[in-house]
Length: 111
Ligand code: FES
Image (cartoon, rainbow, N blue to C red; front, side, top):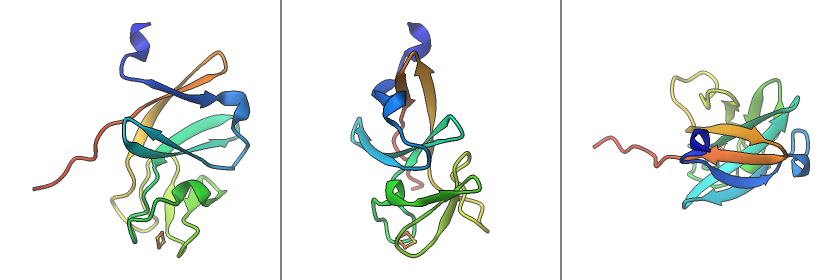
């Protein structure tokens, strides 16, 4: 199963609820996972505003997730914050049978 190299199984697809986020720690990376219209998205769970790990609890609509704390919005596909050019890290997702796999990476620091 080489195509799954680097991926970690996080949950069952059938256990994800439409537009209700779930939080997973994958290789020490905090990840928010959403199912929307049958597709699964995985983003960094840490809001860039106050570095709070709450994105999974956000409100999902119109292809975006809204941070529950102060309303910053992030595109589910790109992670980019509304009105900005940067955003949350976005992770690759694969679904095999009923299993959801995610490939995380460490945030790259700009020194
Ligand atoms: S912590 Fe997310 S908008 Fe403030």
